[in-house]
Length: 437
Picture 1 (cartoon, helix red, strand yellow):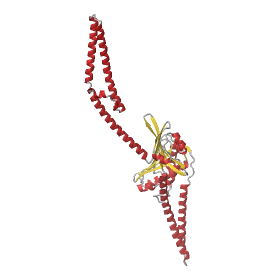
Picture 2 (cartoon, helix red, strand yellow; picture 1 turned 30 degrees about the horizontal axis):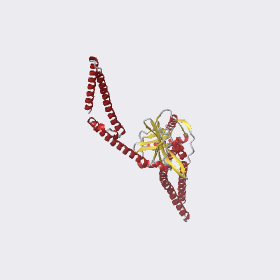
Picture 3 (cartoon, helix red, strand yellow; picture 1 turned 180 degrees about the vertical axis):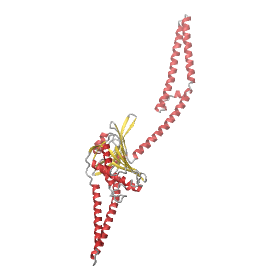
Picture 4 (cartoon, one colour; picture 1 turned 90 degrees about the vertical axis):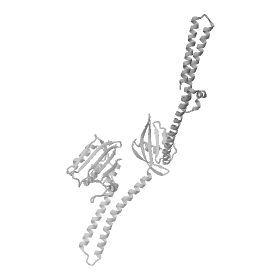
């Protein structure tokens, strides 16, 4: 495509060379005065013509590149477009321009879609950089906290000081609950903080969701399940007591009361009454857990001591402790010991039909802190049982109270931790306790 340019360049170089050679020959071989000067002027003219020709060509190429760079083809010189030597390059640039425009339209459509998705997301999104400039503030967040989008965290802090203070307390990579009041209305929000890096810049992002309605629904569901269990237990006891009382009344009204029947009925009433009293005491123990008395403890050593105490009581069970490094935690030893003993009793019950009973405890660190997993390889639980096992007073054991796991979870919550269960029928149960570091 530059053939004409090369030909023009070669022609001008040859012409200039011939002119210079002629000038030199005239200066040396002749005695004319005017002719050598005329030949020199012609050579100089041809030299500047060569420079002009090259510069014009480079300038035209620069116009093409500028038009491509700025995506503005009005920059193209009309003269250059008309010349045949640039027709092919112009066609190529036009193809590139069309390709760029299609790619640009596609990116703009993707960006618009992403913006629309962010704005319509049901979860509030807030992102800010290290200098405190807010880069993202969507509609859901605006509706949740009741302020219009702001540009800086300083302005956000001024408008919602309590909310921002609670937000800053949440460690990166974790989820926390924020509670604050607007116009005498209490809001409960779930906020997860994470770091996002792009090239050489880092952003902090918060995912914020109003969980007040969800908590209320979960609370109502828990109350419904609890009331069903309480009603079932109380009605059973009251029905038996009412029936036996009626029998005693009938016997006392008869002319010849049967003392043996009266003694049996009164004994049954006393037994059932004691059972109801125990039921109430169990409920009280679930709702009146003492505040934890935290003390720093070496977790490996403390659990090893528990194993040493359990081994003589359950000689047929193999206890295995998988230790991590020397973890030290602050917790209430009495309350956490109660948690471990509850887990132990459940595992012992699940291992009754197992030929080689084994209980394994593993200590390991994770992003949230320290996790202690308690695993037995016993009978396990089906999905229905697993779904209800943390409900207070639900039990599959005849001698069980049904508050052990619920009480254990409550104790873990008081330690800013959590309790999780995974079980499969016939394969065993794994319960892990998550402690915040």
